Length: 343
Image (cartoon, rainbow, N blue to C red; front, side, top):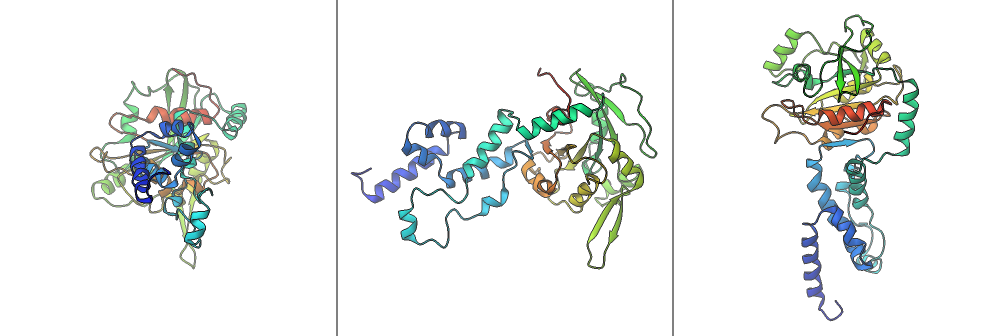
């Protein structure tokens, strides 16, 4: 560029950036390995913020290891207190926010399925105590508010998760029952205890009238300052004490969470068991809402999952076909210490 005017250099740089937006991030990483010039070019924070904003809505799963820091998307690219002269002289300084690292972290974990030391150690420790058939508590508004029942679809999909009758007899829990056992990929069975917020008649009335139900899974207390505290009822506490993890069925049609984060934290409290127990969030839209669904990354933000001590994962699931469900169940079983064979 030494023979070009400053204006032409700017045109060339803009053109290069336009071309790079059409490349995949994986190709950009390869391009950056060719020479020092391209290494600097492909690490431009504006470029990778563009990739994050473009790709986030299309990610179909996210977990506690690959969740990007969404607040960084609105952070300034440069130090506002720095003068123009300082910016020109400090051209080789690192950007304030490494958007490239945020994107690559997600790509490595979700595309290459790399396991962190934390996840390996946690799975090993849980494998020492995991029961022959892991047991999970399933709850959430996605079981009750959608036009197509997720639970009924799950129970009548033998091609996806056949009901298993070969597991050991389960102890009944008052007001809950013994749950239903399913077989995953003909390899391992697991048990689900379904926790509904109220009886069937009230759930159906609330669904058809688009109203909220009085959630009977919790007792509610409001202090003098107006802060609401949720506590699981005694029979729900017993469920939380015996399960190996949790499945939360979220309504991906809604863009607000109301009291969901506080209720999730109440059930996953360390008062009822180890915080190493995983929680799988199944993000489900309605029959006609696949184009307007809340992306899984923003579902994680909406439910405030980053505040949990438990490992968690959000998985997009299509209720009609249960597409995506097996990926989520596979993650859940592995986090519970179950050894699965790749098929």
